[in-house]
Length: 380
Image (cartoon, rainbow, N blue to C red; front, side, top):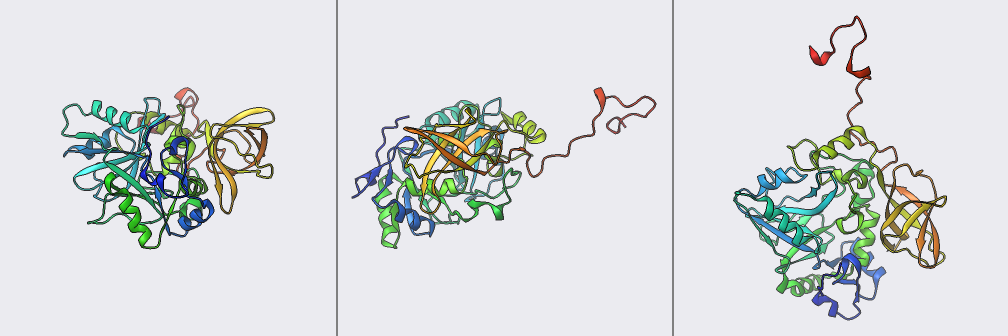
């Protein structure tokens, strides 16, 4: 989807424009490998001004957002970061947003193409409540920083990425935090007035940081197995498939749209698809595009969602494949000019069982007890 946005930082010397969901900002500034290394070691800033920003004000904002989204926001403290999902009645992901409250308003950062629809949906859902929804995309821009800290008083509104921690009420399908590759990825978004975007970047450069493009930030996101609305989500996506119950879903809060699917798949296990990281064969200098078919033994089993060139891992990708795809299988990925092989790194295991799935109940035929025995415990 074309947004028509062009960042003023694209006028920098050496800037090469990004495409797809990152259209409008720089893919890199002439040295993608150096930019990625600087970002990984905490010395770079990334232009994320193509993202969308929605502001929700009013005294009822947190309790209201709590009631209509996947996250527990009723008592969210100021300058505490989390994220939420808006689900369809069938539990499919419609919107995802980074969430932080500054004590006066709740800020939602999402894909630019989703911001108008998210704001419009929220406006339809407010009824008589004391909330005010504003699409603030034209007023505020985001900068990405490799900093693992919440914003503090006196700083701009800042969202610290909670991934891959298992936040309160969440659960995981992938490895525990200490074994997760995303544990070493520090990332936060700082919101600045659009008129101050270039000055904010210049201030960071004066402190010794360099300006990096989305080549760098996306490569580190792929390495961290971090799902993104604009890439890993399609019309069938449920959060379990991408391990998004870690940070975006509270399993024990009140009712919200799509909750039945969340609970059912969590309790029964086996989400229909699973996220994998692919290590792509780069020997033929072919790389797939987002959406490329992933196959096994001549049959399609999934699709690539994000492709990246990592400065250490080489060409890698995230993909969503059928849950039953063998975890040790070498897959084939469609490219312009042929197919390439890809080894899997498991993100969501094929067994599809979360770390805290409830134990199955003992089997009882047709819900009846054997003849001659007493009533089941649930009836006593």
